[in-house]
Structures are given as structure tokens and as C-alpha cells.
Length: 426
Image 1: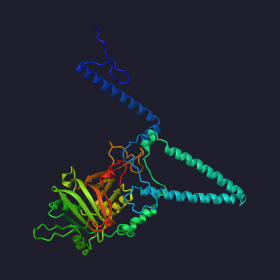
Image 2 (image 1 turned 90 degrees about the horizontal axis):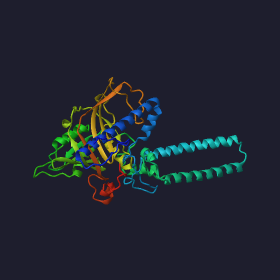
Image 3 (image 1 turned 180 degrees about the vertical axis):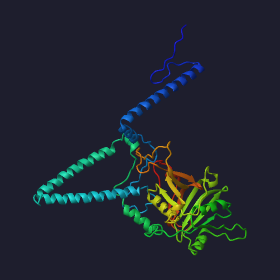
Image 4 (image 1 turned 60 degrees about the vertical axis):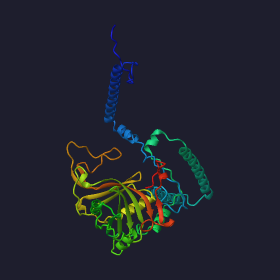
């Protein structure tokens, strides 16, 4: 009986089915090998075509955008009568840019109308009315087309490249900023924040003395005072400690909470009258446990606040801004990053250094796939200093400490807020 060699198809499918286990294993290996060869040939063919025509690579990178939750993010539809903006997911920056574009378009339209009226020498008012009627009909047609486009289901390419946004044209940005300014005047003052002076303490009978000392190295002009753990000592409350700190010109109070001898929460009180922010802490890692860590210095760090887009996120960013001096020491080359992603705030501290590009390294490429000009021979190296941890905002009180009255609670996290995975609060 002559042996017949199994030949795989072009789609790398199994040529036949067999009950033999060893033969099935051999067939699976051949199938995987053929699939890898096909992918490799396709990849090299695409590379040869892109080397000849660079526009093909730009088009591929433009369409090859992963469909993540951030790109599917949705926003609330709000009106001008919404007073409490902290519980709404509204993109403040997008609304501001939209208002600026509308104002610029109105100015351009007025100038064009004025020039058109001068060219007509004021003749034919009925002609002007006719133009306005034509324009209104064309606007109605454009409105129908836009509504049809918005009502239609987007294609796969549009869903991947365009972030989802559900906004309302009636959103009043001025009301958002004015409401924040009226509720929290200390955080949204027109003058730059003063030099911070921070008091760090812990919960009663806490053992997190080392972690609290690390916070004093993270925040400049901060001092750690232990809370009394003596059985006959007076257990000072947070409001009493805040009053003590306010009388001594402290600008903020940090209370580190403990659970199973690990940091579990951080309360930040803006002195003298609030507000109070309650955060939960996870993934606490000291600097000495980080591989290749460095030693921090006493220089004032630079501050990077990333991806705080909603009114609540803007309020949180202003709080962190008051904890660091407005003028950093650039010679220290230290930077503190607070990156918000899916309502989790990742805190990192690094030291950066600029160096020359090595021969084996490629040029810096931007988000659009093109090389960034002006930094061809420069590279930046990072060394993490620590500590690193993750914060999640749980509650915002208008007063010092936890507000007993209902009016004192400005915002509070609830479990139902995460039911819709494409909606975020910060």
C-alpha cells in the first residue's frame, strides 16, 4: 500500500479527521506551521508594498486603532438647568473647544455677511430674504442628513477610529465652572495657590509610621505627627486636628488609613474649611522594593495631571495642584505623575535624564505614526523613585471630615456607577 502524503490547503485547514491521537498532534503542528508561514508571507508582502508607497502605512496605522473602553466612552446629556455637575460625566474641555469654534464661526459669518452686503450696495432686500430662505432650506436638508447619519449604525472602521461620545448642545459650560467656583472657592481661586504646608497623620492606633514618613518625602513642606495611642491619651478627632493645623498655617491635612497593617485609604482635607476627599488605596509599593529604584532628593517635583476631564475630575485635579509648590526645582529633574484611567488614579514619581540616541535605537514616533521632528538625537531615561500606589475617589464632603448633614456630601461613589462600563466619573 503506497503512503500518501497529506497536503494542507491554502487556508491551513486539517486535510482529514482521524481518531489517532498522535496523528492529530502531527496534523495540528502542521496546521500551526502553515498558518504562521501564511501570516509571515502576508506581513513581508505588506512591508514591501509600504516601502514603495508610504501612504499605505499611514492609512493602515490610521485604521488600526484598538477598540478600547476609553474610545467607547459615553457622556451624559445635560441641560442648562442642572445645578449639581459633580455627578455628571461631561467633557469640560470638549465643550470649551466647541464653544470657541462656534464663536469663531459666528464671527466669520458676520464678516462674510457684512462684506456681501457692501458688494451688493444695499440693493435688493427681497434678494437678501430669498438668500436667507435658501439658506434655511439648505440648513434643514443638512440637518436631516446629519440626523440620518447619526441615526445610522456606524461601520466597523468608524467604531474603531472614532471615540463614542454622547453629548448635548445645551450643555452650559459657564454654569459648570461657576457652580464649581461657588461651591469650592478655595480650590478655584484666581490667584495661584500658596506654598503648601501639609500635616500628615494616621488613623488611631495605626502602625503605618514608615508609610506616613514616605508621604512626607512625596509632598514638599510636609511633617508627620503621630496620633496618640496611649490608653489614657485623648483621641483627637479629624476636625480637632484640622483646627489645630489651621491655627498653625497648615494648608492641607492628610490622614492615612490602615487595614490589616497595610494602607487602605487616604483622606485629604483642604484647610481651613474643606472640602474633604476620601480615597481608597491599593497596590502600595515602597521605593526600595522597586527594581532599579533611585533615591529622592529634597527638590520640588514637577506635577503632571493627566486625563481629568469631567467637573469632578477637574475638582480632583485642582486639589492635587494645591499639594505641590507652583514653582518646581527643575535642576532636581523629579516629576510626580497623577494619571487617571477608568476612574483609577495612578501615582508615580520618577527622575528623568536626557541623553543622546544610540545607534541601535529608532527615532521617536508620535501617535500618528510619524517621526517627531526636533528630537531626532535625544532620548529621555526614567528612574522610578517611589512610592507607587493607586487611588480611587470614594467621597467628597464640603466640610472638614465626613459631613453629618445631607448637604455636606457633594459626591459619593456607589456600586451601581460601574454597571455601565463605558461611563466614567473622572
